Image (cartoon, rainbow, N blue to C red; front, side):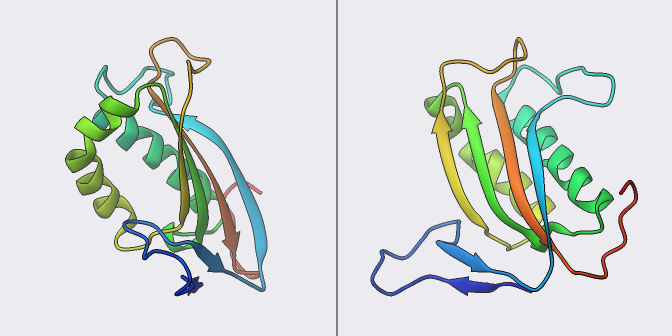
Length: 139
């Protein structure tokens, strides 16, 4: 389990941690995942649906390497429309808690002009630290 690092010299974070200290372990870098299924079809045209599927995809990679949601130490979330993200915040929060529980890694949200795949609204990349003895499905 990580040690949460939220120095009192910073404003208290809301919905994320300023830092998580892990170790010992193995580091897993998860490539940016968009909201598509195994057939390459987007989960929908809405931001909340695509966010949910992208997060599921990230978690699938982490689990395949032997980790769990708490193994994730950092997210970078790329969105094409910050206002759409904010409008869907309640649904995103509910999905996040359903999939991640109350684990809040260090996070950054970045608005970008576009994503590579046509119609993709969100892309999530992650860094996880896995226990040294974690068994992976695909390693």
